[in-house]
Image 1 (cartoon, rainbow, N blue to C red):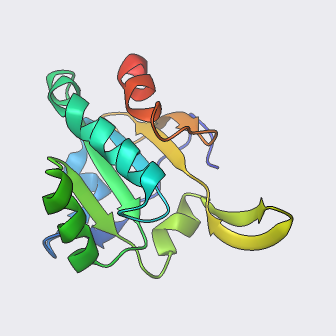
Image 2: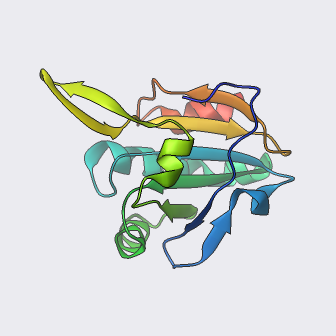
Length: 150
C-alpha cells in the first residue's frame, strides 16, 4: 500500500464506456480511488452500491469516485447498468495500475496462498497527493468511512 503524503501515481485507463481517464483529469478535485476484486460479487456490489447511494454527498464535498477492477469495460457496463451506479468504473485487466498502487498481493484464504486484489481505498487531494490509504477495507462500511474522511 502506498503511504499518505506521497504523490499518487499517474495512470490512464478505460471506463465502462471505453472512454479513457487519466488521474490528471481530476486535478482540482478530491478523488476516492478504490480497488475491488470483481464486479457483480457480493462484497463488491455492497461497496459499489454504497458509493452510489452516497454519491450526491461526495459531489457536494467536491470529490469524485473512481472504482478500479480487473474487469473488462463490457463487464463494468453491465455492473453499472444493473445497479444504476452513477460514478466511473475503470478497467485494469493487465493489473498495471493495481501494481502501481500496490494492491496486487499475496493472500491467504483457508490456508491456500494465491495472488489477488487487496481491497484498498485511497483519498487523493486536489493536487494529486495521497491523503489517506486504507487497506483494511470492509466493503459495506467503506463509502461511509470515506465520506467522513472528506
